[in-house]
Image (tube, rainbow, N blue to C red; front, side, top):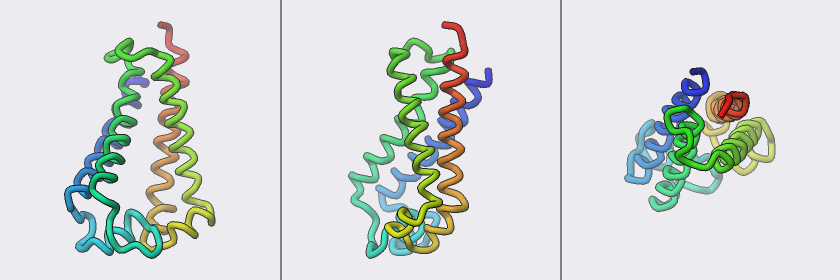
Length: 150
């Protein structure tokens, strides 16, 4: 039961984030009013005033959505739809990626590259901690899935 709840929560959070990236790829500006402010808020890369190309944002959206779907394959509902080795390997890689990204939010090296405001503040308060929480969710899924019989 707990495994399914965690998988669904990860799916909902990352599904929403994937949808947001697709929205930006299609020209959406929320939560900002103009593109330059959006770049400073969600990309944070210095010397950039335009969003990444639409195709790249769509690729990122697709990858995030794939990361959202994978935990569902560890649940009883979709168990067996993918090889378990692929599911466990994917969860391990995603846990490492999200934990590393979460920790990067608290390093000087990352913020020297992504050093614009309000990105830096949002990264330390929201983006980084959320990535750490998602990474912990993937680790919990791994622990619960490998402890479950079958």
